Image (cartoon, rainbow, N blue to C red):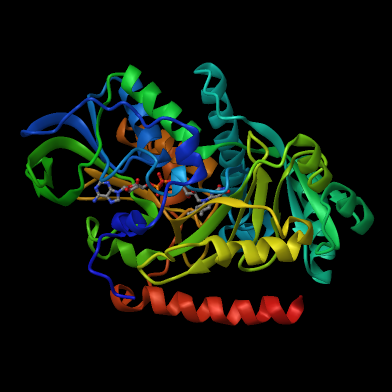
Length: 438
Ligand SMILES: Cc1cc2nc3c(=O)[nH]c(=O)nc-3n(C[C@H](O)[C@H](O)[C@H](O)COP(=O)(O)OP(=O)(O)OC[C@H]3O[C@@H](n4cnc5c(N)ncnc54)[C@H](O)[C@@H]3O)c2cc1C
């Protein structure tokens, strides 16, 4: 449970993911061999880091980005591909916590996040197979009332008409599984191949003169007068501002800030290609789906009609060596008709869960260091937005960054020791609850 390895080293016992096999790695020719100087140094080559890089370079800053392994090595290149609006929690819960006006600002930013990702995809012609529609599929009776409440609440208070209720027979018409008793379609959300998006955006960053260094793990950052020293094995980068974009892979670069989230590992499989006809017999309109259990199942079809099915979590700092049987058991429970299909790929990724499930943004060292993490499994669109807001904040426009940085986040007491075990107890509790309710 307490491995000495860095979190980004956990994937070393895995094979390539489907996503990795679907796209060529970034051709990052920059090699870091000596000390360097830049306006901005970004640590982490996922969507938060890359989006920060694009936005800052467009504002005229010189930008260096350092990634410990490869671009998209972390969650950005391994996730379920659901590009969702909103936050991990429903709006009503956020209103109760932050008040209506703050909740509305976050809602608008959540809509902007998806629009921003779509615009970048269109503007730069990134071929990441964007498909409309994400269905929430209900496992419990109580979900039906909650869907109806949410649809009405969002229509009345937010003028949002993008949700649609499906009763049992309607949802089973869409998703060929006996698991679900209702559904709620979100027609403002999308799904896509996330690594193609991440690498596509990294190329946009390069076109904007961002220097990207892969295989460059940063060991420490240190304040040095009005600059920051970014220390790696072979030297030092000096920058006016630093952006830390490591999300679930954050170890000690930000000191005790890592105790603001729990790192958890979540797993995914991809079947052999099933062909469009068979795929549409399973999900008629090719939506992405996520269910309503605490440890959710989420799935969708890939561009070559593989079922990409995610679900199942572990909390130790070592990855399950072969997640195939771990996840495919869950898949076959939902779709017994897939019992004999071949699983071509399985992999995992680490995400960062905050106690209140809202992202944690902030600054340290007199605003010289910015960070954003803790998207709580809902970060595909929000990480792209985070980069934009970090860039605005660094450029002196603090208002929208503050909508996130003003949110209070609980630390996990003695988090360095307990953040994994505490979450494991929670997982056990909810696993039992999911089981009893199913
Ligand atoms: C299995 C899985 C499924 C998910 N499904 C969805 C989904 O369907 N929809 C959704 O919205 N969200 C989903 N998420 C969450 C989403 O993927 C993340 O919130 C988002 O990708 C976070 O992006 P990021 O750039 O902040 O972090 P990451 O993409 O994790 O990138 C962090 C990077 O930092 C690097 N790094 C760490 N330490 C150092 C260091 N010392 N020096 C240099 N580099 C370092 C890592 O190698 C890594 O590449 C999922 C996550 C997982 C793991």
